[in-house]
Image (cartoon, rainbow, N blue to C red; front, top):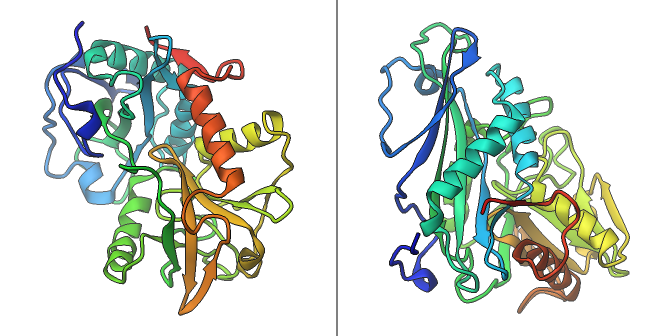
Amino acid sequence: MAKKEIDWSNIGFGYIKTDYRYVSNFKDGSWDEGTLTTDDMITLNECACVFQYAQTCFEGLKAYTTEDGHIVTFRPDLNAERMMNSAARLEMPQFPKERFIDAITKLVAANADFVPPYGSGATLYIRPYMFGTNPVIGVKPASEYQFRAFCTPVGPYFKGGAKPITIRVTDFDRAAPHGTGHVKAGLNYAMSLHAIVDAHKQGYDENMYLDAATRTYVEETGGANFIFVTKDGTVVTPKSDSILPSITRRSILYVAEHYLGLKTEERPVPFTEVKDFAECGLCGTAAVISPVGRIVDHGNEICFPSGMEKMGPVIQKLYDTLTGIQMGHIEAPEGWIHVIK
């Protein structure tokens, strides 16, 4: 198929309707065989469980064109596993891993002409999600569900290059101990919306959430994990039972150790230690790594010497290596790249 006539270098990070989406329904204890459809509308009962009790979870991953012309996705098996964990925590039926990967493969292949060309800086963003569909008025799980996945071409998360961002330490909590912070539940993101809108009003790009129990350890932002680099070049990421297990973060730690020969640590990070780090970044699917230049804690500023103007040297190497693997410049570990066509 010929590529769609889209100005790939100027599309933003937003929704553009594509031709096909994937749908599968769960009823009477099992999933149907699933299908691709051109219908982008969803019709549900007014009392559907997703509306009443927010029984929904989702994932996010990308497809892109590599240098050799293949359309690929990055580690979709980990997205499948994370969605299964999210579903289990929310008392939803798990969509099997092999079915998830098959659905993503069919979806991207059907919309291949929406996958941006290599070198454009754009990608095809893929959003799988699941929700309770039948009427539920008492507080209990639904008995019927729908798994869907759509895709949309998006431009670079940072148009014109990644510029260091400013973060505030927020007084809001993202997730409670023993809560749902470790799964990709829609309600987690609803909880963060007021905090991010307030942060933007105050002139900040993002919030740093501390642990809700003691408010002394770094957790994450509303939609990304933290990575830090010590002055001796060790890559450190916070560890907590209420942090979402980022696929990008896990990949960065592997790249740091096995490709760049760096020491890595995944451990609880006291906020009092943040001022001693040389570099700071946020990692996630959308931007891969965003450099952090400044963190403001109720008027007290922490500035990172490597990263006030651009990415620090270690974070830049991590970014270049990981994106090089994704784009086919650098040989990937076995199983990381899933070829669509």
